[in-house]
Image 1 (cartoon, rainbow, N blue to C red):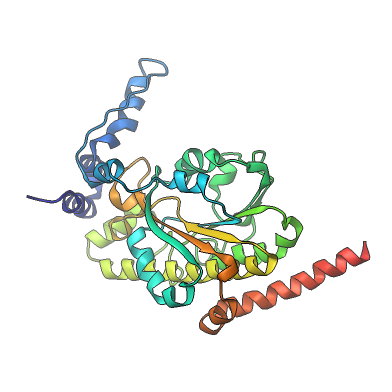
Image 2: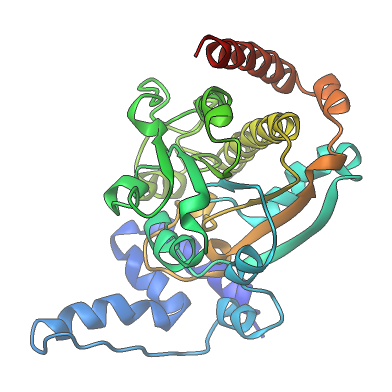
Length: 334
């Protein structure tokens, strides 16, 4: 008997071999995905009709009904000073990256667990998760993802810093993670009594190493299907994106410790199909919804050890010290 996860993979293999019927194949992965299509068709005839067909056919539904916790439950019940979002980060790839740093972070890790995201893309995650987080007026968001502006969230939070407006790298086709951390360093002292959300664009493609062309998800899937781009190349490039973003996440936590923050959470908004072509909107599958959640005690975060192992953290701490001196000088001159 074919396992549910294997069934998903067969469907995704079909997608990269024939992208013209990609969404039909993805719908077969979990018929609940037919929901957007049904509502679109019926809304042409009946105003405000909402249908919600539920078919228990694949591992995603099995996970949803199992003991795997929902991400929102953790984010609304756990205390945090800093919430770090790694865009499109899958749980399985996260554990691979974490292995390199596990011994360094061991004292500060409170928990690492897979959680279920209710979303297949950032806009959906913002509506279903972020808008349900309390104390919004006490939160400063630094984000490289433009969905925050598209949904006009600025009035709901104390401040949203739109890094995508000035940090976009046209050569890379994305906002590199250093821009998020550099912005955090510059403004953290202005809002040191607030909680922070840092939304990195990685490991979401485009790739920072240039191994995967800047293209839409369907194009990447098509290139893989035509064997013009290998699956291993796509996987390794995604993993490198995650590795770089994770280092910058650690760098931001190091700055958070200096500021006096106590607790941090690293998680994601949704997963990714990776070599099967990104994260199609409104498609629910295991690979797109099973994401990591890591809770850290910042007070036990060993900055010196991280600095020895990470060039990025050392550079970041030096920058923070510089901006802190400028901030203190401005306060004295007032």
